[in-house]
Amino acid sequence: METLDETRWRAVDTHDETVSGLFVYAVRTTGVYCRPGCGARKALRTNVEFFATSAQAVDAGYRACKRCRPNVGRDEDQSIAAVIQVCRILEGSDELPDVAAMASTLGYSVRHLRRRFSEVVGVSMSSYVRAQQAERARRALGAGAAVTDAVIEAGFGSNRAFYEHGASRLGMTPGRYKEGARGERIGFTSIITPIGIVLAASTRKGVCAVMVGPDESVLAKELVSEFTNATIERDDEGLADIAEILALSVRGEADSTKLPLDLQGTAFQIRVWEALRTIPAGETRSYSQVAELIGSPKAVRAVGSACGKNMVALTVPCHRVIRQDGSLGGYRWGLETKEALLVAEAK
Image (cartoon, rainbow, N blue to C red; front, side, top):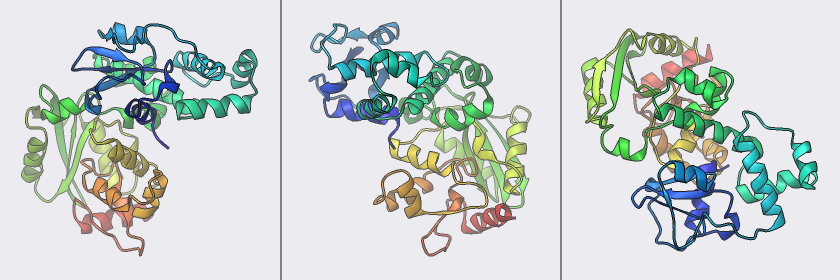
């Protein structure tokens, strides 16, 4: 199933007027925000961000488009108006409210309201709530909050809930990643494990790289080449907890997929990586099964490519993806490493 942002972008990309009122989109390069159905020149996806309301876009410093006038109300289909009301309620909720009560107030059955919401918005109500929580966490982190504070402010209720539903959605902006993480401070540490040296790197928001190999200096050079403009420094003490979890994970004794991440990838890659984090330790999936899991059954080769682009070994467990015939397939950090990890997890 698509994420909320993917659904919103599809509406913008197709100039879908039917969802006007559900959200607005803003273009960073022009400083303007619009309705989804605006006929203005198409913006690049990397320059677009979404807001639930015009007020939020204005607070972020954007001005209303003079062509589609997103700040002016319009007549709406009654059912869409009801869905918009539900969206506004969910945006202020830390958990899914009583759907029966909302349906009764709006004059719909629970089943009809749920179905209409999914049809119009593109995701379920519970997914919408989680997406809003993740967005609040992103903004809190962007304002300088620590991860723990962002968890509380976003309404996740616990670190575990944050790691499961919000952490994997927190990533470097495309612009920041493209600039080699300019201005970013990245700490790294390394540990000796049965599979070789594991080098882990993290920004303030989360783990941005986990690499495996026989030579730490080679891994460190690769880290520098990936984040050319970042300030990279060793931080063994600050990353001690992450190092411990990874050391145990190599032995199949801990779950490193719950660590918060700070990644950048295409929408497709993110979908694949999120799917991989749902594969339980001790189990494997074929590339075709992962493709089916993300709703793109024909994209088997693309799934393999996304696995190969994964910069965070163990935390995004691409070693758990094998070929249909049971053979290991490829692995960025070597097939011997892949086999060792699967054997350890199987025990």
